[in-house]
Image (cartoon, rainbow, N blue to C red; front, side, top):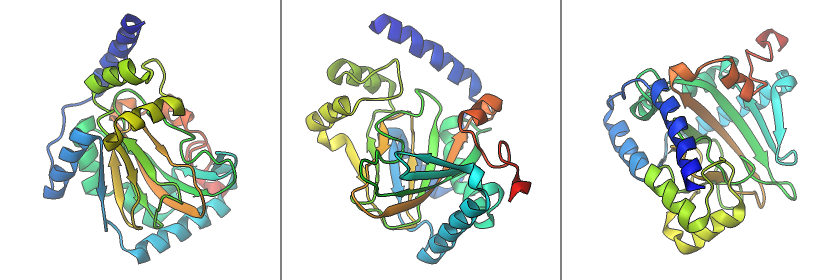
Length: 270
């Protein structure tokens, strides 16, 4: 089985390599420090990126867009998780986050100098009984070439669905080690909760629960294992920039996230 998994990962890795331009150098002192942490651990928190007033303004933009473009709203996790992809197309404040130069530079240090933000996701997740949390359980976004910048627009406690991450799970050698010891799959991006809990019980120091105040940015190599913790109460507002190598931009990518504002839902509809 491991031979088959190796062959599959080699094929994925070759495709990712072909899609990646030369890596960019950090252009800002902050980015250098952030990305050293991401390279080592897979995740990094940046407190105070936006102030509370800006977060309040962006929350209102999300609510306004969801009302104007109901056809663009995804409903997930038993209706608890409401999402709008491509919201930066119609919200000026969110567009500034989508285009934030330090975050783009951070992405380009790991995805290549031509990487770009394909779209920004606005997510509002609220407590409902039986909710699965943002992302609906433990998963990787892919095995190669994935990077996100997430900003919390509300204070996030363990009650309100913080981002969780298994550190070092983005590293190739660690992927094989976790497969061998804990049964973390190599042939699918979805991970059963029992397997993730085995890992956490044995190596609790690798389990990061990213509680933080509003305005905190979380940078994550999402080839690593992560999820949004199921909510126990309250709600969480967040924005997420989805960065990819430019060569990955095609109809298949956008259709995977359909509906995306400006592609599957006309902006004129609002």
